[in-house]
Image 1: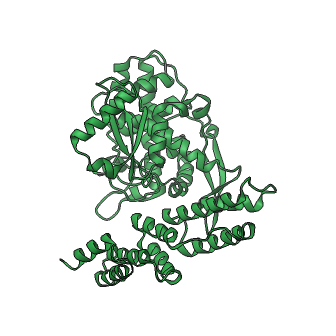
Image 2: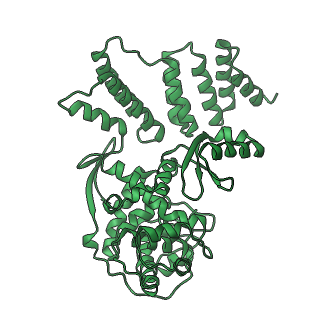
Image 3: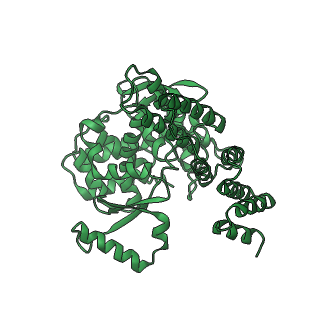
Length: 460
């Protein structure tokens, strides 16, 4: 987890940013059972100045959208993307095989033998932007109330613990803004054995905004003034430097600035910060503003998908566009098939419940059959695949519903019973798991996974 390590205290000058000039947009956020108007930050500096094209943010964009079973191999210094691999395959390889694989990539991309290659697993499960939306909306109001640039609220909430209210780090930081106990208490929050206001959105936002206005922003200005570097508080590069102060501590960032000895601010300074270490300012600190840039880019793609609305359900977004457009998509059958796949992803990600999924897929399939009466229907393996994806995401209740429905429709499918056996096993119901694994084996005696599961459960 990310840590607030402030080493400079006692400075109480207030930030002078005019929060009325911060680019706030309002959108209707459409869920499966409600519509809520929310506020977000839309910073066009990110694109006008070309930050989104830098290799580091582009790398982290991919990592944030990549499932945890996959990983990206990149060059440490510039985050050049070299390959994408499965984590399971990587973990099975020996250290010698790791070295041979990396050497082959160095030869393929004409890299020096000293080039450091990193393997970074996907973090899609962590960066849940949809769940972060209501927290961002509420925190923007708090930041504006205290006269603090709400850009920081969205940036921090997108990268610290998006959508999570009670997440403690290994060093004790907690809440959506990941405040340390001492910092939170200093900023007026109650933190004791019974109460922890860091998990309250408004209280946590108040603490973070006060920390930024009394420590992070003033000391970032002070260190730039000392270096005779001109700045504007709404410049993106200035905001990124403040984020570094929030994460690593203003003292560590001041040390980095002294080490760089910059003549000017801007993108070049931030890129130098990414390559500089000082005290506690190391790899995680260098990455912090890279993560912020990447998160803003990914979040913009979600929030700015339509002029006035944001659909949390990707299946609804696609199907509603199809139902309302005057011109049909080029290939209607493929388009509707993609709608069904989106609804599957929505179910696996927990955006919609099982009953909503069944209802929507039924509607799309009726539309599809009207266009192409001979269009293929779902088979047992396709439905089972959804169930196994839900099990992998540890959504046992939804997986159980999928497999039970499939049991009715495909009573002679061995994989349906195997899926139910695995579901019962994960739910801790040993006898039911054995029963369904045995049903699966009767239909497919060669099911080796079922044989192994029965042996484990029976203690053989």
